[in-house]
Length: 110
Image 1 (cartoon, rainbow, N blue to C red):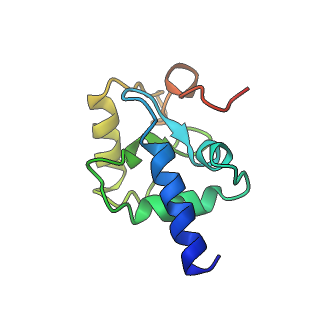
Image 2: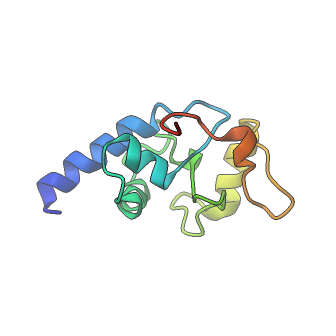
């Protein structure tokens, strides 16, 4: 991706992530699919790592496909990400993963 297409991609990621409701999560791959780039889950991660508005763009609501949190969560690590999600009422399994069956945003899953 060149710089201009990366900017457009990142903005589409941010627009979609803003739509993930409080108390729910989406996966990197789910966001990629929703913006029409199903093979770009890793790029979704890159975009969120440089989130220009962490208080406005809720990047903490994006998790791995198995519900794991991002070890490299740019805004305080996985402990901070978990605290933000718990504050919104998101539940976790005993092994520390988000309970995707209960808290995954259903957009694009059909």
